[in-house]
Structure formats: structure tokens, C-alpha cells
Length: 370
Ligand SMILES: Cc1cc2nc3c(=O)[nH]c(=O)nc-3n(C[C@H](O)[C@H](O)[C@H](O)COP(=O)(O)OP(=O)(O)OC[C@H]3O[C@@H](n4cnc5c(N)ncnc54)[C@H](O)[C@@H]3O)c2cc1C
Ligand code: FES
Image (cartoon, rainbow, N blue to C red):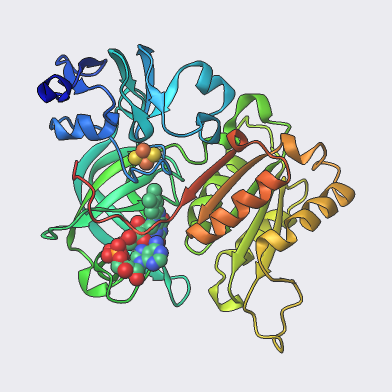
């Protein structure tokens, strides 16, 4: 009698997921997270943070209807949503699907190769610019990132963003924040390791490409950077300003640091901003500069100054016109800085889809290696 009411577990429905870059079709349980399921079956696909922050795992769904675990408006623009872009790490499989792995289709140049630690230059007490000499030429842009792992290390590779760019070049540079005792940053900034081998996989991501958005070349771009994030942001800006035939898009760069001793590249950036007809405007905000110092600039956190900075710009510079809500923004650096700037911009009414960011999160150690 009671047996009539005993529920037998339903067998999980298996759905078929096909990928444009692979012949084999995968059988995935309904309700599984797409990225986890694909990796569990031993298929190598690009991913990094697994929490929806880096966009490395973006896919385009060509057939079928998955469920997104996040509001896609926070990550993708209107056009991308229309074209069915999703983040595999934030997507649940609900039907059979045909998908295209974005990085695999648009970024077929990603390669894994050995490199040598070629140079190390201290920019501040904690930030070092390093260059790696690649064993063969590659193409990448400033703002994309690489996975780095010194030869012989049995840990997850660490992500670092390129500060330079090259077409078939072999010297790739990064700004590294040094955490004493931490595995990879300690190795990278140690001159004893010059000439030693490091494995590199690159390039990943498309941070910074918003600067070239063809329909927004008249629209101002707000860049916010802190810590070693300044390296990739200033690399992106430099490339855009130097690009031949490219209109000079108005750019305001707001740099945040604790104190003057933590600033770098500022003299070069000031010189660029001071050039006649420069499209660049620079602001620096320090939050722990000693009161008695010679600093006459802004003090506090960037978020506290943002509204004033934008107001003053519009009043004093004709090129920074228009409603801030229509601007685009690029944020790069430590997570607290990126999060507070993101929050502040959204409070000011800037749609999430117009904001690109690269959070320099600590690498998660339980990632599946790919
Ligand atoms: C897409 C992406 C791009 C990145 N680009 C850069 C870059 O260009 N330059 C850069 O310096 N970093 C960058 N990072 C962050 C970098 O990957 C991590 O900081 C990484 O964990 C450092 O590795 P590690 O072996 O030195 O330290 P780990 O072994 O990972 O950590 C050891 C200890 O160091 C400290 N620590 C390490 N990283 C951080 C952190 N981010 N915040 C606070 N404390 C930390 C903590 O005390 C931690 O317990 C990026 C991260 C991502 C996801
Ligand atoms: S956004 Fe999915 S792996 Fe980072």
C-alpha cells in the first residue's frame, strides 16, 4: 500500500549539445550548468573566473533555448542579447542546443607556448612591469589577458593583462602587483628568474574593445583605473590615440591610488593630455595621501568625486558633451575599486551594457585546468 506512494527518482533527462568547433555532440543533463558539464566531459573550452566576471566563456546560442542564471543585460549589450550571447558559466541547459564558443570562433590565435622572463622594471614599490619573450610570434591587444605559469609549478595558471599590443610580435608586457610570498607574482618580479621559462596561454578576452565601438566614436569614454590596472587601461588609451584614421574619441581617465608614491605613468599621461587638441583628460584621486604632503589634487575615493569630475568636464570642455548616461566606461583594477565605480555609474543611470570592466581578482584555486 505504502509502496504506491514511494517516489522513484526520475531518470535525469539527457539533452544533446553540439558545438560548432567540435564534431562530437555532448549528452548533458537537463538543468546542468553548461560550462561545468562541458569541462566534466573533458572538452577544453575557454573559461577563467567561473562567476560571470571575465566573459571568457561567452557563447552564442544558434539553436535551442537555455536559461541564464544572471540578468544578461548586466553583461551584454542590446545587440549581443539579440544575437543570443550567454555566459556558459552562468547558463543552465534546458533544451537541445547548438552553440558557438565565442573566443574559439573569433580568437583562433589563442596559443599555449613557452616564453622567457625577459625584463623586470619596478614602477612603484609594489607594481612591476615585466616583459616575456615568446618562443614564437603572436598577435594580441592591450587589455586582453594571458594565463601565466612558471615552468615546473604544479598550480593553476594566473591571469595577467597585457599592457602593450602587437601584430606578430614576440615581447609581451604586463604590470604585476607583487604580493609578498604569493606564488606567481613573487616569481615574476624576482630578477633571479630572468631568462627562465614560463608557460603562457594567450590572448583571452576583449576588454577595451569598447573604445573602438563604431557607433559611439563621438561619445565620451570614461576610464577608471587603480593599482596595476592602470597599465592595461593606459595601453588601451595609447593605442586608440595613436591609431591612424581613427577619430579622436573624447576620453577621461580617472586614476585612483592610495598615495603619490603608488602612482606611475602619470607624467606621460599628463603630457599626452596636455598636447594640443588632445582627446584625453586626466584626473587623479588619492585616498591615503598624508595631509601634510604637497598634493594639491583630489583626495578621497573615486566614487566620491565622480559626479563633480563629470560636471566640471561638461562645463569646461566642449568635447565632453551629452548626457553621461549615453557615455561608455571602462573600469580596471582591484575589485573594491571596480565594484564601487560600477555601483556609482549605475546610480548615475549609466546602463550596465555600456560599462566594460576587468576585475583583478585573486585567482581561484579550485578551477579545472584547461
Ligand atoms: C582577467 C584577469 C586579469 C588580471 N590581470 C592582472 C594584471 O594585469 N596585473 C595584476 O597584478 N593582477 C592581475 N590579475 C589578478 C591576478 O591574476 C591575481 O592577483 C593572482 O591571484 C596573483 O597570483 P599570485 O600567485 O601572485 O597570488 P596567489 O597565490 O593567487 O595569492 C596568494 C596571496 O596573495 C594575495 N593576493 C593575490 N592576488 C590578490 C588580489 N588580486 N587581491 C588581493 N590579494 C591578492 C592574497 O593574500 C593571497 O592569499 C588579473 C586577474 C584576472 C581574473
Ligand atoms: S564569465 Fe564565465 S568564466 Fe568568467
